[in-house]
Length: 177
Image (cartoon, rainbow, N blue to C red; front, top):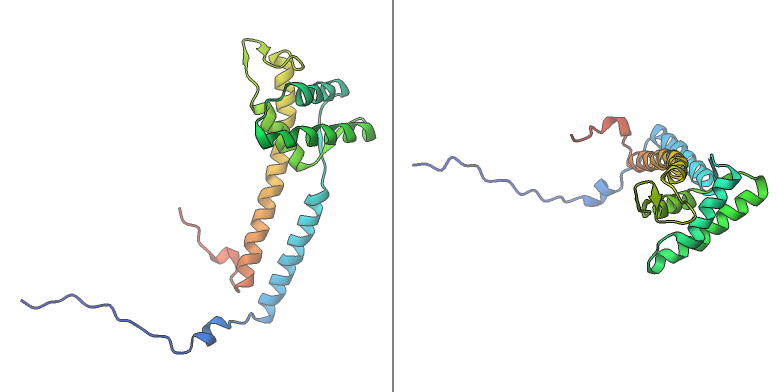
């Protein structure tokens, strides 16, 4: 009986330098520069962007009380307590409203996610009831959705820049299901 299986061919590339020195066309270079400029502008915007938390002054004080007195933490999580309190305090003093950065929003959400309760009682004396807790959580979660959308936009732009740096249009790539 004859062996009908084919053996794979091994190909040796002699001129690998020519392959690795791929150059972009003028159109590709322009698209890359535009995407890079857009990415840098978005990074700069998000670095200083403040998000509005729709809370009254009294609710902000409840949130600050929770952060400074009741928020459970372990080890390095303690760093977030002081930073969140500082951000909330500075924001409220300036405008009477809570305009805070993305990192603080994520930290507030994290600490609120650790709250527990039984019935309508919450294990935080500053928050007190589930109704107050839910108000704080909804306000934080609503703002957190905006932060997530901004982070997705940033991630997509980074992807576009990476593709265009290789001369690939992102639309040409078919996502795997």
